[in-house]
Image 1 (tube, rainbow, N blue to C red):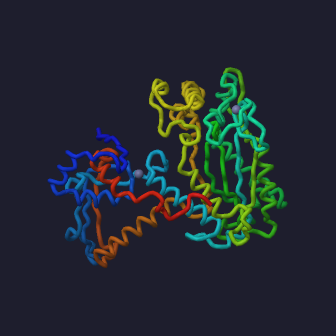
Image 2 (spheres, protein in one colour):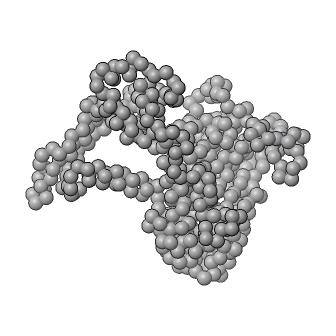
Length: 457
Ligand SMILES: [Zn+2]
Ligand SMILES: [Zn+2]
């Protein structure tokens, strides 16, 4: 069994774990550990690996493996193990890795709006909208009204009021439907994406099959939790030519046609759900649908929705789960008994308990509600995109890894990459940092506010 290390979060005012630090200092490993930690880019919950990697020279004419060029054995590393970034997308789990994820998502969305990273620049001229799809109501909740009138409970709730989004009457709130809606939100979106293509075809006077020869609908979407714990979707939807982003959109393709098609598809799409104790469930989007045309920055008068604002918005929500909006959990629940101990809101607790209870039903097995109880039933992907939208997160990661490797290689020699042979074997040895490592890592972190990219539009 791998050893799971506790991740300690230290601030610079935390007293240093002196005995461990002085041991490291006495052993002369302190500078080495600092170097190893700085390679993690601030990741506080790295994956620890035991193993080795050997790089051999290969004779290009005979193909024979020659001398050892490089050998790395984890036991000889200052930390005693190889440390790899956790790459967790959640801010609550690893701020540094979530930040990388957010930047990558920002780039991915931006590439689909302005071009770049392999997507042609003319995508900026394709009809594009930013649409928000909400969940239906499951019972009245405390809210802030835009007309200045008080909430139905008679209170003017402040922006930070924890009551916001929670039911006026928890006993009549439809928790069952709320959880099941989240569990069906993914399938509902998938069906919507088929419907929207059909609606576009109809408006272009084409059959659904023939639409493919003229246009494609591409999208990138992100799931966000509303305060009440219902998932909703924000999506960039783009109307491209027959080859996706690579090809100019047809002359008939306008943002108005796209908006109209989206509205028609969103209002008619339905997914049949289970029948629970004689009550049949059917799922649809809520009536609040917001579709706005995305303008290029050039045409922005400060009022309209810009590419940058859209990308920043989607990227921000890509790093959040149910925990940030509803105060739920950022990891799966193992036992129902844990629920009582947790410092979460009553509303979140009730949603999680409902998911847990429904999760025991044989007929709902396929929804895996216990495994996804911490996500309030939603088991879909947080951010997804159609294949032709723009580059992928994988491609961005590969590009970054290649760049790092190239830098390292340039520092070493001018070796051809295909003239080496690599033999490696790694085993998972745990996660996290020791107290001393965590303290040292915290001392390496840049001061807050020195980040380059904006978090808002
Ligand atoms: Zn991390
Ligand atoms: Zn209220």
